[in-house]
Length: 311
Image: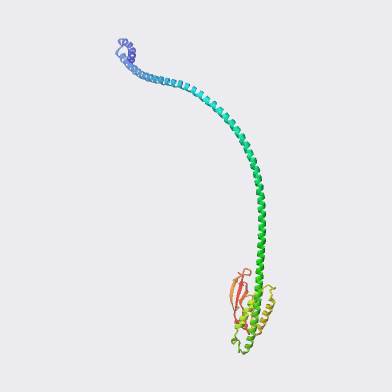
């Protein structure tokens, strides 16, 4: 309706004009009217949209006003309530702080008293431990000294027993060797009596002589190991010297080889032993297992020797 009224208002003035103008102007005016109608239609459409939006905005504004009024009344009551809660909390905090202060003071006093008692207790305990440690150390030292003395005494007694046993064994060995030499001397006398019946050296029985030679070497080796104070040692040395003379008087010779340099031309059964104390290539006879025995210049027993050689 509004659109029709606007159109009539705009078109009525043109009717009088149409009666006074020619057809060309009328056509031009019609075109303008058409354009104006289109513009009016567009403006009307925009106006309707704006009215619709305006109504929506008015409703929303009314809703917001209601919410704002409600929020104001609600906020005021909430603020009063929060202020009361805050005042209550402040009072509680003050009371709690006072109680905590009192408790802290009491705790500090109790702690200081406990620390004081603990220090006193620790001081006494430390003193007791020090005294106990000193007593224990003294006891351990006394026990150690007693045990050491006993061990030393036992060791000394053991060494003394070993020495006495060795001495007794050596003395008994000397006695046995002296008796053996006496037997060998008597046997050599018998051999010497029968020697005149033998036609040649090859027909002579050298079994006893070789046994005497082996025993002489054994006894001489033992003499080097015995203590000079051993009972009967001098008598045994004299007996060995005497039987050696008797042995030589019967035509037998013990070739001296001990501590002599070894040469490749020697007729002997040799065992070589390395020795770090000798120079490289040096060879020394250090042990006689069996001696070389000659009878009337003829070898009747090959020596068995041990030779130490430097590496």
